[in-house]
Length: 258
Picture 1: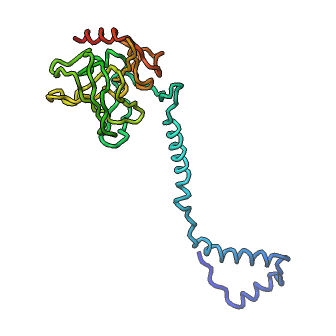
Picture 2: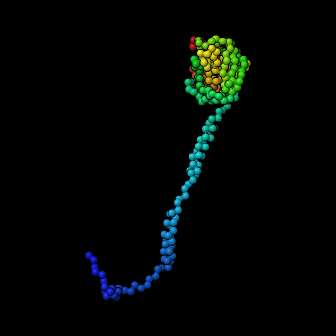
Picture 3: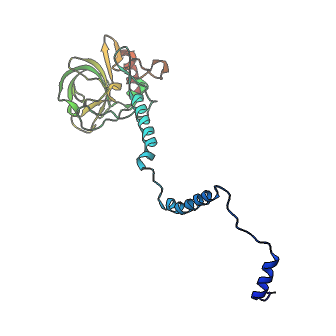
């Protein structure tokens, strides 16, 4: 319910009833306080209008790049191959049938797949030709390196392969692998590039795995890093050592294959 507005005579009568309010002053310093609040209220919107400075993307990427660099350095250190007392690189040999990382020809060309063999039996069962003899001549270099091998004894030959006193070897130069040179007397476990060819070209099985140096009646694996560890069964204690067997033992395994 609304009251009717007061007329001037009622305002005057009401004013006489109320005490005189007088002139009140603000306490000392209150003016400055209100002035500071006013200025703050005026400048605050201007600050809010200024866009926040963005952190450069490069700064955000630095931690990730630093982590990637550390991982790369760790991988490089882990890839260094320790060297044994006989100056052969000492590396772990994978289980039989598994493939090791590829070995690149030092002179360019195709990549050779290096399979790890654990026993002489595995080499014998895989080879197309097992022979003892001498390297007569070496030709070419890099991926095109070849050799002529004089056969003194055939330990095993795949029936469809031709019998010959001399065979041609394909010997691409591979990193971490040794080189067959003229005059070396060896037993070689070979695979034929094309068994149907009239004159096949052969390659040692997995580089040094298929090469045994012969001295007298003893055959010794060419490399301690790429070597079998046993005759019929693997020997974990023989890793990183050149495997040694007699020629008679190699001949027996070859006859067992038939």
